Amino acid sequence: MKDIAYVALGSNIGRREAFLADARAAIGALPRTSVLAETEVEQTAPIGPIAQDQFLNQMIAVETELSPLELLAALQAIERNAGRIRGERWGPRTLDLDIVLFERQRVSEANLTVPHPELPNRSFWQRELAQLRGSAVG
Image 1 (cartoon, one colour):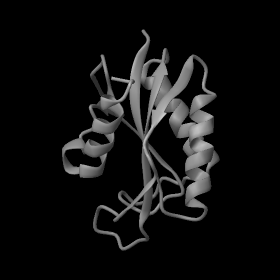
Image 2 (image 1 turned 120 degrees about the horizontal axis):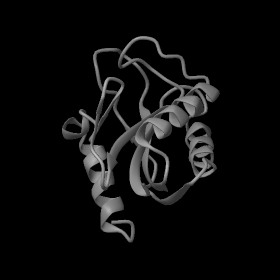
Image 3 (image 1 turned 90 degrees about the horizontal axis):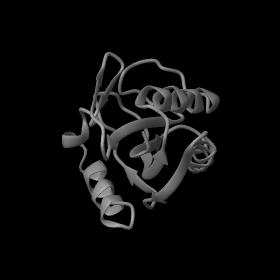
Image 4 (image 1 turned 180 degrees about the vertical axis):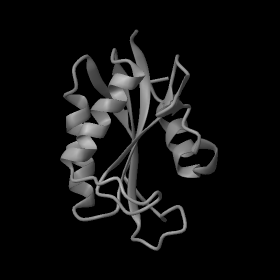
């Protein structure tokens, strides 16, 4: 089923801007997937109990025919290619890619919940979603 997914991109280690740019390109190159729109990159404070550097964040809207779990697997592969190591929860990372929302689907799987459970707690995600959904995407 073709759907629009909203994917949050974040980085707070190393070449943050390059990690986001590379991720946008890699997501756009996924099969049966195209990037429709993107928000501006913004800097935000880290969330959680671990002291760490500021994040660069952005959200993109993608039209995809990949299933939610196929998209998740592809995003996790892009994270690994960027040197992401899944360590301590809320810890620093080279690249973090989260599926925040689908226009037509809800997901409740062991390894994926959409809408993302943290959406109500992240005002920058809410703002970015509103921007993308208010554009020609929505």
